[in-house]
Amino acid sequence: MKKLVITLVCLVLVIVVGGAAVVWFTYDSVDESSVPTVQVEAAGQTLQPNAWEWSQPVLGGMLYKHFANDSTEAAQLGEYETGGFAVTFPQGYDTTITLRRDDAVVFDGRPAEWQDALTAEPGAYSLQVLSHRAEEKGRPYGEFMFEALFTVLPPPKPEPVFTAGKTELEQGDIFVMRLENIPEGVRPVTTTELGMGSFTPAGEGAWFAAVPVGNHRQPGAYTVDVTAGEDSWQATVTVSAYAYPEQNLVIDTSSEQITEANSAAAYQQYREKIPPLWETADGERYWEGAFIRPAEGGWISTEFGTIRYTNGDYSNSRSHYGMDIAVAEGTPVVAPNNGRVVLAEYLLNTGNTIVIEHGGGLKSYYYHLSALDVELGDMVEKGQLIGAVGSTGYSTGAHLHYEMRIGDQAVSPSMLFEDSAGLYSVEALAGDEAGDEAA
Ligand SMILES: [Zn+2]
Image (cartoon, rainbow, N blue to C red; front, side, top):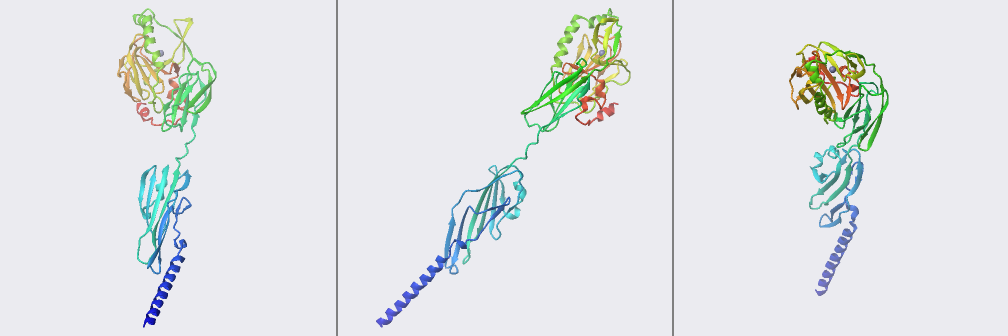
């Protein structure tokens, strides 16, 4: 009996030890190679998990063998000039994705909701993917975590572009320039002995400037230098002479009106009121499309730039800086283009006077008016009534003295009625409906 007991105990021991050995052998034979390969593809690169844990069943799930890998550094995918690249996620797992751009969550969801366009915006990205398989008796389970960092660069900045308008110009014409792709916050600057060349915005990143070729500008070549931040350009403008007519003006200088208009006080007042305006330029361009005639009908009694003598005194010449339009007293005077009224008052020398700033220092001047229909500071539109023709100030008959200047340099008003004027040579004329209505 005792012998039988010992035998049974030995048998049980053999079974237990043998079974344990089998279990041990089986358990030991399960190694990391049982952990599946799970990958994420992003931007053509294969991401391995940064961290994972995996439980593999042994002997049909009687036991589980656990494997784990601690988190490693996020994968560095580098920089991309264009984003929106494809990302593919593991199949057969419960996957959640978190995408951050510049530390803000831009996506938090499932692969089915993912759109590659989510990586299109420039910025610093972090992509996190968690692929999970839930525990279920007898089956392997675990999870894989992926993390990748990448940068989508902003689109390369386009190179600045400088465009010069007509460079072969007659006295009285205007040289223009256009700049494009100028970085925000940079204001271009012009340097030239031709005169003011103040840049005004002309659309996103674009600027426009008009430089006068005054009636007295000596024929020859002139340089125009432009700088915008780090960039600079130079244009050469060739000025040719315009044959200005001469005119002998016969005036009764003893009349009360002429005596007052011609007085020292009149010139003193003129110097106080008008030349200071030459120095000013609005930093915004108001004018659009070609300039229209400020007064209809009549005839040009004195052209722009005419060399004038008075009462046959040929030792004394004076230039006429505007054009005189001889029309009946009371003829409406309209704004030839959009602008801002910078002077509207009676002056002894020029009579009822209006000055309109059209932007960038380009101004129009109206003298000898019989009526003023605008006030200082008014914004006017092309074709809007501003006053009426008269004969106030230094004038012997009803006419409109119409003058245009950029800075202190007088330019030809009549050239601006033509599409071929230098002023219009870098931009297509558009939005000229007001002109058509007034014509
Ligand atoms: Zn005049």
